[in-house]
Length: 348
Ligand code: AQP
Image (cartoon, rainbow, N blue to C red; front, side):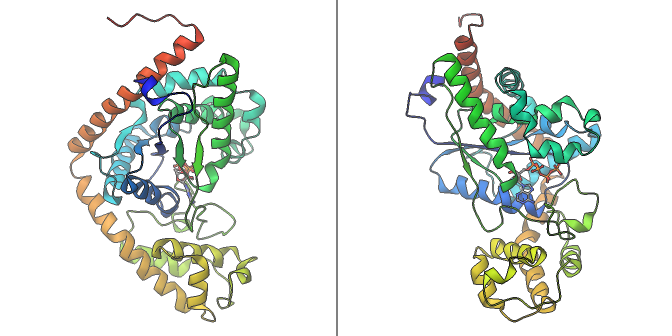
């Protein structure tokens, strides 16, 4: 199986990505990642594998009941947004042990100096680094394993994951060099769309994040229409009207963020949005943005609400997905062990 996936130069196109169930899905996750996941599935040009990465979520403490709930809700969010568990492989990470096993192997390939450069660890660990978990520090090596255990070639992510993907490439290259093979593909990040970095609604210099203590900083996929409208109305902006050209937003991060969000939701471009609203102030723009956000998100939120009523069905979908994922991952892990000289029982 592994050899069918990996044939020298001829890796077939395979897409992998994941989202942490460390809270509910945000508009940032949707526009930066999930919407792209669906487009790539619909494109049909490659096999698509999508994962709710619960092992990553526990790099910071998660209440166990909340983790279960968030994993099911996130799975419902994937399906409601258009991921079809028959066409894509959809599962939660901890059900496929190969991720953690290859993660360990990669923690022996990656260098401490490489991990020391990861800005996400610095941001998330904050000032009290000594108290951060070892898992939070080693997170990018597990992420490399998530991707490479499928020999995935393309990874759709938001802008914030670019550095981790570069590390994934470095790990693949070092493993291949160390072992004199071309076993792991050098992955391509897919960072596309008008909103690859959606910013907080309260601070245009900070990423919109599901774990931000302020709920007003983000739009959740479960927010109702009134809440979405209220959050957009209260979003921080500046007193100036929208400019004639995009360059006029260069030093206006909050304004630029709302324009990007509008463009991504409308399937348009920031240039076209600025051209349409040039000269109008935010009192006029915000209600239009709220209407657009509600029209896109309300159907997803309604469907999510329906799906989470059937947790048994969600768990069955995840288990089926995990079985299919393991069937792809295990032979690649076995080959990795062979390359490293590890003895394993011969296949009967
Ligand atoms: N604000 C964002 N704009 C664009 N893309 C985003 N992504 C996350 N936030 C934004 C993309 O969503 C995918 C899943 O991210 P994740 O949940 O695995 O981790 P994260 O990037 O750390 O997301 P959060 O919301 O900030 O989670 P917490 O608060 O738990 O740390 C990735 O492709 C990411 O780029």
